[in-house]
Each structure stands twice: as structure tokens, then as C-alpha cells.
Length: 287
Image (cartoon, rainbow, N blue to C red):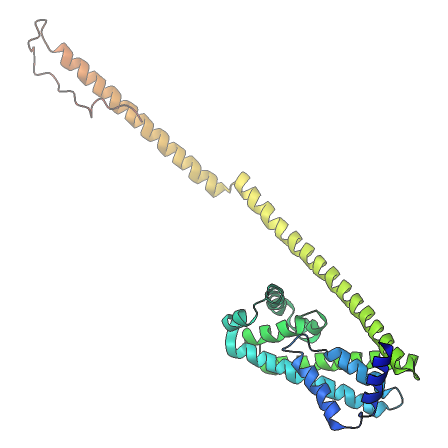
């Protein structure tokens, strides 16, 4: 394996001055915005290791090429998201992980848009999701382009510095320099991921603590209604009591009329008077 890596680094070092190799760096950095499996960061780190620390001008050129390539790719992703809209993005992003990343990016864009555009590329799948989300939600392109150029420049400087650190550690052994640079990059990304998770957990706790007073206030209103609510409830109870009393009086009047009607008849069953006719309405039961 080390022999293969040694042959590969020797081949690449012999073509460092050729334009096509720099075009490859530009293309890979750009395509990574649409195809997450493209090794943009690894490509830039490898080039920085092969260039070494002696040629500062070449390292500055590598930084510019990588930053502009990544910026062009992000702008293409933004344009694609703007063209197809949220519905089209939902059809393009079919995997469950991709949908989760897109949902995360939409939420971050509404709450921390600047941080998402500048630093979203350090989250796995975050670069693609942030570009599509900013386009799908019609984020202003001028502001996006400026913020994204800042983010790609920071990313390119970081990648070149990691590669230069590996080259400085093993100046005479490019393979060892590559391995050292990749190990350093993994450690840095690990710290970034841990920090991101801690911040996300802290934000979730903050959101939960903000919602607790609302729930408590709602429970308090249910257990202790406002004076207006208590007055309205008392009015309903008073009206119901008045209606019940009226029904009782009406029923009592019907009974008295029925008694007078019975008293008006003779012992032989004849009528001693017209009497009163008792109907169901006169004797209706109280409610």
C-alpha cells in the first residue's frame, strides 16, 4: 500500500506545474457542492503536501483555486435550489439522511443563516443541504455569494494549512506527510463535530426551557380562570337556576289547576262546573 502511495505522489509531483492538475482541484472543489462523495478537502490537502512549504506562492495559488472552485459549486447549488423550489428539492433529495440534512439546513437558515452559509460545509452533508436550502427559500443571492465566498476562503486556508503542516512534519517523505495531514484533519473535524453537537444540545435545552413557562401559564389559566371567565360561568349558573325555578312554578300551577278541575265534578261523576282541562303542557315535569 505504501509503495502505491509513493508511486502516486511521485507521479503527481511531476505534474504540479501543469494546468490540468489545477483544473482538477477547481472541478473537484466545485462538484463537492452537488456530489457529497467528491474528495474536495482531501484533494486540496494532498496538493498542499506535494507543494511543500518552500513555495509560498504556489500555496497561495492553491488556496485561491480551491476557494473559487468551492464558491462556484455553492453558487451552482444555490441556483439549482432557486430554480426547482422546495417541491423540486424534495424530489431530488430522496434519501432519509439527505432529507434530514435539508430539514436541518432550513431550520438553521431561518435561525442562524450567516453561520449556516459560512460554516455549514464542516457538517457532513451540510454543504449540499445549505446550498439547496438557501436557493429553495429564495435567500438573496448577493448576500449568499458574499457570505459563501468568506466561508470557502476560510475552508481553503484551513485545508492548505493542514497539508502544509503535514509537509513540514515529513519534508523528505511525502507519503508520511500525507498520512500526518489526514490524521490532523480528522482530529480537527472530530473537535468541530463534538462542538457542534454540544451547541445543538444546548440550543434544544434552551428551547425546552422557553416552552416550559408557556405550558405552566396555560395550566394556570385552566386551573385558575380569569375573573371574566368566572363571571361568565356564574352568569350561566344563575340563568340555569332561574330557568329551573320557573319550570317548578309552572309545574306547580298546573297541579293546582288540575285539583280545581277535579273538585268541580259531582260525586256521581257529573260535572259541577266547566272545570279546567289539564293538558300535558300544564303538568310537564321540571327540567
